[in-house]
Image (cartoon, rainbow, N blue to C red):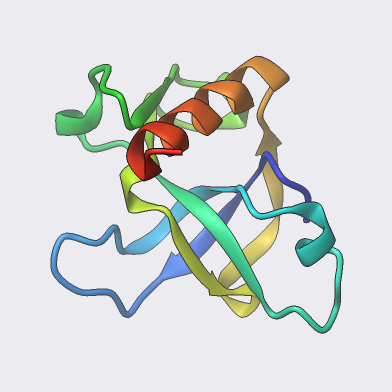
Length: 115
């Protein structure tokens, strides 16, 4: 599991306005944590295909259908960044962000976290 890879994951249970269900997400935690077998969690930015998020904003990153092997036009939601147990990852990586797309995600995270 490497920073910038996209995996499908099971985001249940969740509550309120949190992204939930089976969906892709981008690994954003440091590789040193992901590669350590004793470290059981990973930090991700969830991805949604909901139309209401298909517009530019300081905390979203837009993807075209097929980009990074994503099946639909969608958006990464940096304002929904979350940490979850690695057991919630489903299957192998489905894609990987380019360095320029990862830079967009990092900018969106900085915008959200005010770093």
